[in-house]
Image 1 (spheres, rainbow, N blue to C red):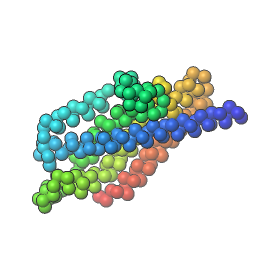
Image 2: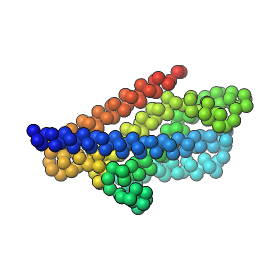
Image 3: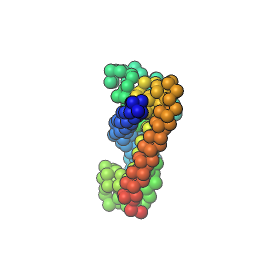
Image 4: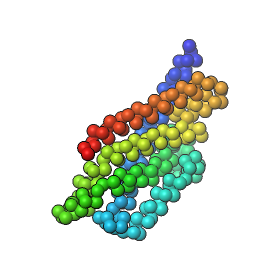
Length: 219
């Protein structure tokens, strides 16, 4: 009974740590990735603010960021992480590589969602004298909102998987518990419990994201 209570508390604390890492890293990824995605859309050829120079730079940055495996990224930016938060180990330290990995993903999600908007809607706004900022705020963002919500939901789910990887090298959370207590101490029940919790988190987040996206989808 004591062991059961001990591991229940560990898994509960690991779940909270995972939610903390995912929530904070997702926040920063959206704050930075959203304008990044908007810029890469509006600077495309024949869009509202075409600039091939800026487009090529941003497109290259996103492609490079998405092509680096997360485990390599974590190790590669350890000096940056240590300088930013004072440590390269722990849940707070894990937020840095998680956010860095998610930013280009969010940027591409935003681009995909906004490119689905009919060019006719944008042209109608331009013909009525709308400024680029007005088109972004009153046309692009509202029209792309359901797709953006689903894309951010997918990002959150990916971050849950990344956070488990981060736990394997000292990032805390459910991944850390699965490795230290499930694998290294041969506690199969702990390993299974962490997997079940991760699956439940993914299902709940996906369900919430689908519901919110459906609410805002008026097509």
